[in-house]
Length: 325
Image (cartoon, rainbow, N blue to C red; front, side, top):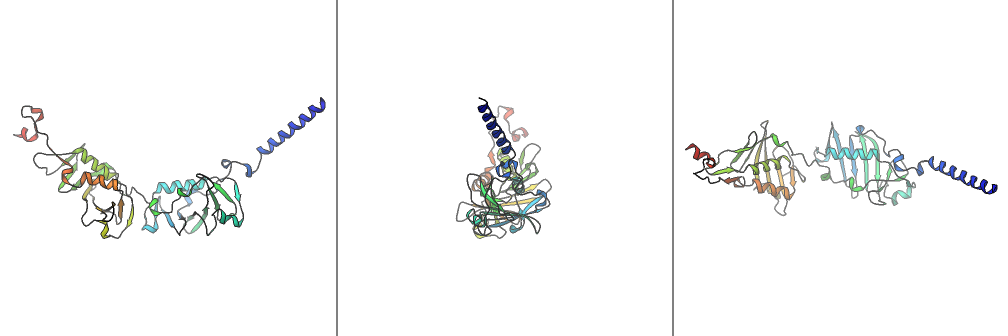
């Protein structure tokens, strides 16, 4: 009996020692949350990011003050919030287990200097701070990764599609937006709409015409919240259809600044091009956005409705003309 108890005590001691060893195990058995971030950088230091992908795809993002730009696109504004999210993601990612560290494994996991899905270079001006290679994926939202100055290939909770290498994915799609209340007048097709305290008024209405204020509100809202599709460049092209625009209007802001909008339908497809007078670029516009604008504002009669015929016997239903007489 005593021999059995001694044996059980020894087994219990072994189990306790194993539990203690596991609790104090090194980084090889630690969870990802227990590890340090793979890239340990202060985000404020990063003011230049180069993204590269297969087939020589490459783009650069550069910070000017607090705003990010696309230098290869004549410094067109980048989506600064998206860039900041990327930086935060990269500087807080904690690596999983090391899967390999040999030179041959770099090719196999697509994290070599010549073969990769993404190469991300973080820099402070001309000084490279970190270069990260992203390669093959072992599973959903996971990817093999390697820092350029390290041999270890690790897994990260990241996907290549979260780091696109197309410039259009990084353009600021809201570059034309403005606060709706800053729109004071809209002129189109011989009609001038003026914002009043709580409504819109139209000048030069013919007798029996009434402004559709809901349509005027909708037009102002669409112009204020306009999103571009992508930048087409700064050179006009005949196929843009701007010689005979589908829509031509002028917006005046509260500070007196006038901006002209010309919308053309491209000749060979169901696509639209927008040119605004205060930007040098030509923009593609999603078809549903362009169609909605054209529906509301392409012609004067889209915003004007006939006045309701009043009942002469009912003074409350008299038109201003009848009251004046």
